[in-house]
Length: 161
Image (cartoon, rainbow, N blue to C red):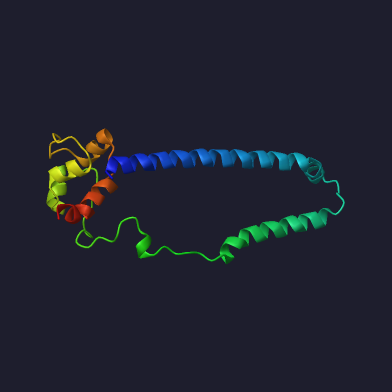
């Protein structure tokens, strides 16, 4: 699978998640409006200071519910991410390498030992991009991200063999 296909699938997943997020948000907004409508009389009485039957009990139950909801996440068991859950395995010989947009392709080759031609092939970039071109410029024009360059560096020994 090439990198552009992976980027495309990530963007599609983000779009789907955005759509799901929108509809769930809309549902919650409608539930809030319904909740306010059903409790409108109580809201009016509380703001003008009229006593409501069993208002103390209702307020106490509401406060108890808020406390329970606030404390529940603290009591739940959390799963901590392990080293195996990382998107990329930990670098071995590339720990000290920093890849940023102001680097040129030739600087990246000097820093990593990965030939410029290999980056261009691995990222499906045109072969005529000069080695003096900055990564940020390439990213804006052809849409690879810095993480894509890091992946090529990480995968390079596997690709060559």
